[in-house]
Amino acid sequence: MAQLSPLLKQATPVLAERGEGVYLYDADGRRHLDFTAGIGVTNTGHCHPRVVEAAREQVGTLIHGQYTTVMHRPLLRLVEALGDVLPDGLDSLFFLNSGSEAVEASIRLARHATGRQNIVVFHGSFHGRTMGAAALTTAGTKFRAGIGPVMPGVAVTPFPQAYRYGWDEDEATRFALRELDYALATSSPASDTAAFVVEPVLGEGGYIPAPPAFLEGLRERADRHGILLIVDEVQTGYGRTGRFWGHQHSGISPDVLITAKGLASGFPLSAIAAPAALMEKAWPGSQGGTYGGNAVACAAALATLEVIRDENLVENAAVLGVRLNEGLRKVAADHPEIGDVRGLGLMQACEFSTPDGEPDTAAAQRAHRAAAEQGLLLLTCGAFGNVVRMIPPLVVDASQIDDALALWSAAVAGAAG
Image (cartoon, rainbow, N blue to C red; front, side, top):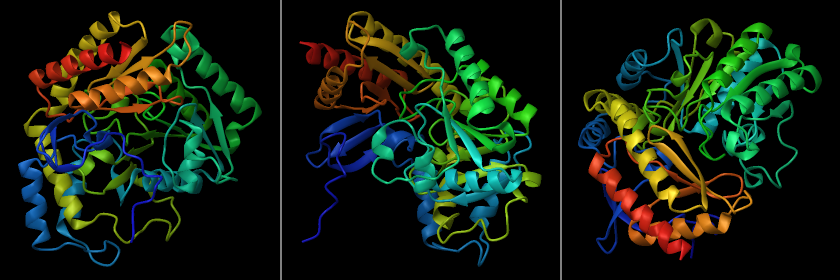
C-alpha cells in the first residue's frame, strides 16, 4: 500500500474538503479562517469564481500546448497583460512551473549575461529547494543539510535584521551594506560577481522587510560594479505587500524579477522577467521545459490579474495590512513573549522571544497550535521556527481581519496560560 512520504508534515491538522474566499472547510464541515493562503498563493482567495471559470473554459479547449512546440493564445495574452504591471524595461518573459525553477533560470541567465560565476545572497534568504536554489537559501539548515556539496560560487552576507541585532533599522542597514562591501573586497570580487539575489521581504527567513535604503544600496553597488540585481518576488509579488511588487516600496528597479506563488491563484506557474537585451544573452537551449506556460495556468493567471485590478486588491492589502499590523501590536502589548511585530501589507508576523531576547520556539509553536484549534490557520517561519506569520488572501475584508485578531489574541493568551 502506497503512502505519502513521512517527511511531509502538515502545519495544521486540517483535511480540507473545499475552499471559498478566505475560508477552508474540513471533512466535518468546520470552517477555518485561512491566513496561510497556501503560503501566499491564493491571493484572490480560494476558488474565486472568475478564476474557476477561466480555468474551466480553458480545460475544455486546450490543456497542454508545449510552448516550444506550438504557441497558444493564453500565453500570448498573459505576456501582454503582464506588460502592464511589470516595472518599466522588463519586457521579456520566460515561464516555468515553480519558484525554485524560476530562481534557477535567473542564475543561469545572470551567469550567461555577465560571464561571471558568483552570486551574492543574504542571511535568512529562501530561494528554493532544488540544488542551485538551495545553494542560495540560508533561511534554515533543513533546506540544504545533507546534500552537499551544493552549487559553488555563492557568497552570503548579512541582511539588515534590526530586531535580531538589537539595532534600529538605519544601523542595521549600514552594517549590512558595509559587510557587503567587505565581501566584494574579500570573498566575492566584484569582477567575479554576476548578481545579487534578494527578497524585498524575507519569507522563510522571518518576514523581515528590506529597508528601502538597503535595496537602494544594492542597486547603487550593482550599477557601479556591473552586477545584476535580481529581486525574488515569489512571495512578495502580486499585491501581497500593499504594492504590486514588494521592491516598489523602495523605488528601485531590478534587472531581473522572479514571480510565482500568486501568479495563477494556485495553478503551477512561475516566470522571470528581464529587459529583452539582457534576456537574449542567455545561451541557445538554456530556456525551455515541458510544462512551463501551461495553457490552463496561463488562463488562470489572466483571470487573476483581472481580479486583482477590478477588486482593487493591491489597495486592499495596503489598507488592511495596517489594520492587521496595528491589531497584532495591541496583542503583543499584553504579551511580552511577542518581542517584535513586523511586515508589509498582508504579510505580517510576530516573533516570540524569551525575556533575555533569545528565540522562543516553544512559545511560538504553542500559539500556532492554539490558533489552529481556534479555527485560525497560520504558519511559522524563521531560522528557529519562533516567528508566526499571517498571509491572508488579498480578498480578506476588515471584519475577517478583526475575527482573526480576536482568535489570535485568544490563542496567545491560551498558549501563555
